[in-house]
Length: 319
Image (tube, rainbow, N blue to C red; front, side, top):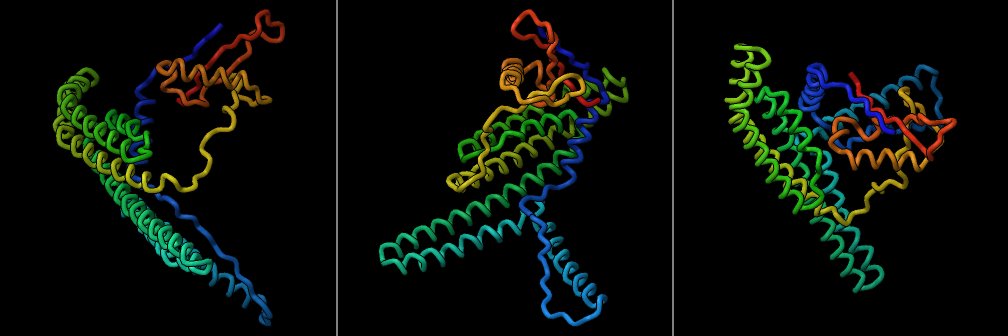
């Protein structure tokens, strides 16, 4: 037995999604900018309480100022120069340290250390440079896309960008997809946007749709080219760092299931988790607007169930 509760789409939900996209486009991203406030050790202090307080305030003002500049230097729109400097510094240090560590053990180890150091320097320089280039072009693409004034296009583009380029080949493939998407949206928008606008809001909607269509004919292909450049650079960067140690991104077990409309948590049940996974995989179209953890199970046949197990499944979405 299976019941699916799917609220109808509304203009409010679409506008809410578009509003979220607008916020993500306008508010630039910050990457790898840890804020660290170092501790202060004071030995043999012979001052009054106010003196200690002044030293602490001065120390944390200085460290907080440094942290602010670190964050400002890590924003995408300027290419994350702090991250670029850190990567090039890592490569340069390896270029110096690895040969020196190897030469202590012998000439052969020194040669191996030289090769490792040179490889690290090239890898980090390439990765840092292309990462910055990807961030800059991606940020410009976000800004240009807003000129289309097309909420539906922005939502679709956000979905298009979700797939990351893990290597150069994927980067090139995603680049062609971005170019095609920009051209397709630009050309079809000239016809569809005035029609949809007239259907929703009469003559006013027609004029608005015409403006969106004409503007999008230029803006959307340009955005597609910028996205393509960003994806290619992302692929080059990830290719350069492919063999680096990375955190384990594979799940050790499936996400636990939630139960009832209140989505309460129960003891982990592998069968329930597998049901959620199968529903998402096998019914992708039905649940395409419902997140993986947005499904909730209800055991409708307990406690006197006749079959082995029966469920009601609800797709819960925010209004």
